[in-house]
View 1 (cartoon, rainbow, N blue to C red):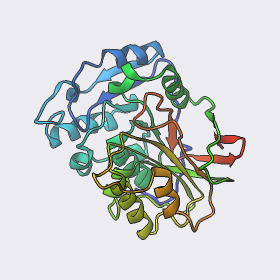
View 2: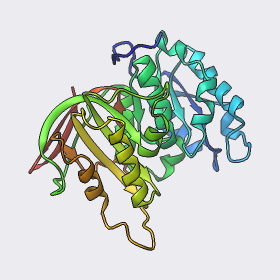
View 3: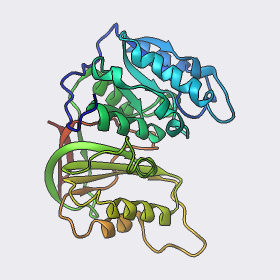
View 4: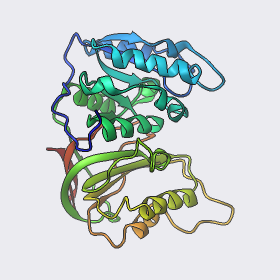
Length: 305
């Protein structure tokens, strides 16, 4: 049964010879999964392709029921140790309630992806206390940096993940720890007050997004604030906000200014420009696991506890 705490003691990291799956719960794929299969096999993994990787239904990788059934197949298969979502786009919210995730409570496995997959991450963390990996997906592998792919391998195989990034004068200094949650800002708003919504209290929040208007980012952050999501955080990590747009009449604030205006009354550390999101160097983050965030004048260090 779903529970409210967070504990990942039952999930195991991958080892060579493990079987993993690629499925497509959202938008359809424009290219074959050759690069992803080759990479995962080079790590010693056996790859099973879902029926959705070749499916097409309007913009989706099959209709909602078809995509849900493909996901269900891999959730229920105890031999599958990780599920890689092939891409994001749009569609996870249409199929999530058609999937019974309860088998993951007794046979946990990694759910890997980002962007639209934030909805699945949030649902799994909220209901089944399992960590998920926010990182490169099969579709993004051909354009991914070698470093980001190495962090994905490290996260999957349980190797140490420590990030050190350059200082940013816009950061808010401080050191704190907490369980990391978050992902794509638009999807975090999409799950508010639903069965997939997370408890933000005492957590470190990571956010990223792509192609949004500055005013829309401001609105989404203020919506989170009004919902009480930002007041009891222990830290905030701001990743890539790529391809931001402005109106003909400029909004008048940069992204960091928007963020800091929203959280100005709080004192938790804030880190800008973490390399994760819709960027080639999309470094992997294990959501649902405790980390330490240290932001000082020398730079930022993020390490898992």
